[in-house]
Image (cartoon, rainbow, N blue to C red; front, side, top):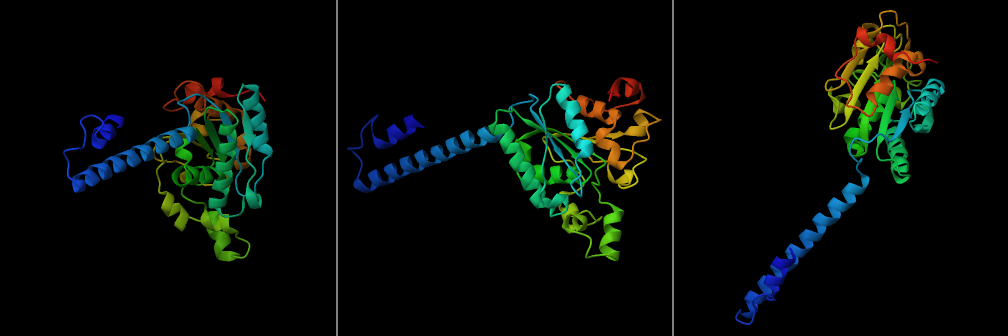
Length: 276
């Protein structure tokens, strides 16, 4: 760019032979080239500052579900720390019942704090509605440039019938997040049925989940994990997913140093169960 600018200004051959009008045109072109070059430079430098650095594991952000309960996630956070990972439970506004876009902003703030603190990247584990929050963050809040891997636990990617029933029978008690989790909601239609890239996704669920139907948790583009197909004797219910030793093992492997596995099966059952 410097060479083009110098030549346009005549430092490499002079502008003495050009008419005044021609000189104005050439200088104008040089200024445009310089400004465009600066804009591209700013975008590259600024964008690079916020992007995750390669595939190096960093802080794990744990996102609660509807209602904001954190007991199970704190058990998982302790296990992650025992395995050498930094783990933070994200504090959601409105106890996790407010609009999911506001929750995605809270996740984004937590990610920025981790990256400013020196984390090379962030991983996310979202329980229940927290997985929808993670999708919204990646798709609409710039999370794709910050997240490395994301695991969802019992997440209603296609919505949950309980929310639809609450909206129909007691609309005053169905808070904003409840409304947005009803099957066919405007938010779920906007998110679609595919995991947004380039983040690597893993979706884990239990056939014994009494809150989110197992059929709602598979996500196109993710590694889908049915717990009972890994360990047939798994009896994990919805609230138990974050603290279940089998789920912990799956999370650790999905967020590990190596490339995430293409799937989990019965041969992995014994090795995956983490001692509580």
